[in-house]
Length: 265
Image (cartoon, rainbow, N blue to C red):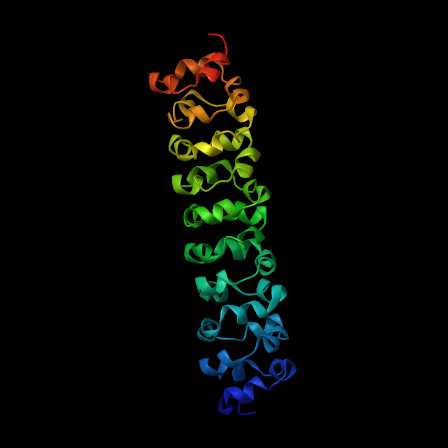
């Protein structure tokens, strides 16, 4: 078959079975115009081997809808070079199901730009193990919206070192649900800049265990705006050592009710 001579309309009329019998040479003969004419139904019928026959320029010409159509099985078989050739827009168009099918090696190989292209709604499709494989460069490209969309399972996939790489703007994206799920080990990896970036309205969601395990350096990072947001239950977890480490400005920020519930000196 002289595949290169087919019009987009003719090519679009072929069944996925017809397409799957094309050899690698015939597939690479397809022009980008022809590739763009392939329907989601046609592409969904192709195997991982078929997908691997497309050239990088051909993959780059496909829409996010077309890439998604290959399905989880075929996408999980993509080699690092082909996956790396996908644009942020194409990666961002992957469904949570297709994202979750990517292997740890594939996720670790995604560029920082590709990671940032994943929608906030779909990024939770990555497993906790996947998140544990992300590099500092990949993590720093996450938007506050993406960070805020992570499930607690996603978050628990991050190591203490990874938490420490998150920028203040990313930390500010954490929700009350996420903050309440943090354990002492994770929170102790927070830098003073990260703690100061936490929105005052979310301070009350930190567990009493986390508050009681604060270091003196960390407690000094709380701002005068954050301190009044501590709940009475949280204040009761502050040890005399922690209170003694606070600056005069921090102590002055306590409300009357909080002062009444501070531990005895």
